[in-house]
Amino acid sequence: MSLVLTLMYESLVLNLNRFNLPRRPLVVSGVALILFLCADVAKATDSRTASKLMQSMRSATDTLNYNGIFIYQRGAQIDAMRIMHKFDGREERERLISLSGPRREVIRDGQRVTYFFSDDREVRIERTEPKDFLSVGLGDSIEYLTEIYTFSIAGEDRVAGRSATAINILPKKRNRYGYQLWIDDESKLLLKSVILNRRGEALEQVQFVELLVNEDLPDVLFTSEIEGAGFTQYTNSSPEPSIASVVDSSGWVVGWLPVGFKMRNHKLQTMVESDVPVSHMVYSDGLAMVSVFVEKLKARSLSIQGFSSMGAVNAFSRVAENHQITVVGEVPIPMVRKIASSVEHLTH
Image (cartoon, rainbow, N blue to C red):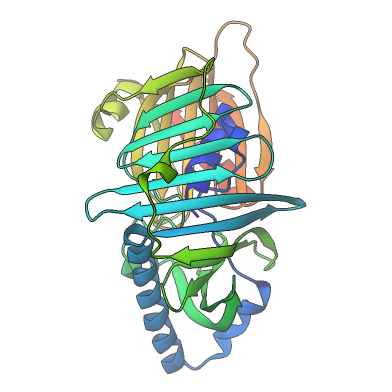
C-alpha cells in the first residue's frame, strides 16, 4: 500500500509524518516461511504462479475502480483509512482519507497530488510522477525481483470476506525484509500485506476490512471535504530537472547499497519548514525503497544523530561536512547505518 511508502519516508525525516501512513505496506505471516521444504519442481511452479499473480495485481491496482476501508497496524498503533480509486482509460484519480486521528486527506489527479492537513490548516500541492497509494511498489519486472527474492504460494485464505491467495516473498540474503501478500482471487487487488523481520515477526500489517470493486464512482467523491477558509496553501508545480543534472549540482553520492538497489530519483527540494534545499535521493530494488536526505546545517541549528524506527521503516542520521545526512528505508537497521556511512561529497 504505497502512499504509505512515499509519505512515511518524508514524514519520518522532514516532519511530514502528520498523515501517519505506511508507504507501500507489504506483508508476510511467520508461518509462511516453511515452504522451502517443497521439491525443486514444485518451487519453480509456485514461483511462476506467484509471479503471474503479482503482475495481475499491478495491473488491477492501476486500472480498476474500487472503494474500500483498510487498517494499518504498526506495533500497538492502529489507524483506519478509506481509499477510492478511479481510472477513466487515460488517467487515474485517487483519494485517501484518514478515519482516525486528525482529519487528513491525500488526493491524486493524474500527476497532481494534493495533501490536506486540517489540524495545521495546510494544503500542499505537488506535481509528481504517478504513485500508487495502494499496492506494492514493483518498480521493476518480476523477473528482476526473482534475482533478489524467492516467490512462492503460501495457500488460500479469506480477507474482507473475499477469497484470496497468499504469496511469500522471501529475501535471498539477510539484508532485506520478507513479505507476504494476499491477492484477491476475483479482482486481483491486494487485500492484505505484512512485512516480516529476520525472525519472521510482523513489523507492519495492512488489511482491507471492506472493499467494493468496479463501482461507479462520481467525480464529487474525489473532492476534499476539509479544505476551507484560513488554510495556507503551498504549491510546488515546477518540472523536475533530470537526475543527472541534480547529481552534478548537489555533489552528494551514496557509495554503498545492497546489491539490486538502483537510483529512481534525485531531486533538490525545499521544505515548507525550511528554506534550505535538501538533496533527496531515492533508491529501490523494485520492492523495498530507501531514501537518502542531505541538508546543510545552519549556524546554531540542532543536528540529529542516531537511530529511529517506525514499523518496518528504519532511519539513521549522522553529521558530515556540516551537513545532516539521514537515511530512511525498509531495510534492517545495520543496512541503513551502512548506507548512511557511505554517503560522501564529491569535490571537483
